[in-house]
Figure: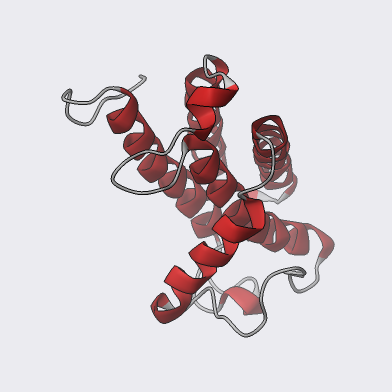
Length: 173
């Protein structure tokens, strides 16, 4: 995490890679299961969007000077606990599986752009300072931006490997 500009540039580059990847997909391609799992590209995008809403809530809270509001998430599960991740991901899948592909893509796209916009609004010092926000404990808000980018990279690699089997870990760079 070098600086604010670097983080935001990485996020926008990841957004552009995803947009290029998704732009050529029709509804059938976006909703086809990606063996060996039952998840489709749409499910991966919905998953990323759902987790992104938590990141947006954190950055919105930083901008407003409040604690984050994670409304709509199951309160009996702890997203910070590895023990609950499988149940949370199953909840995300069940919540979004019946949404049409255009809706999922639009929600993800709008959310990603909102996330970047909010990141722009946070002063660099506040973004990089560990302990600045009590609800992040011993982490800097920059980690939220960086983690979102890494999460998108991880899922993009899965989608690309499925779309282009036998080529290893493809890249759109």
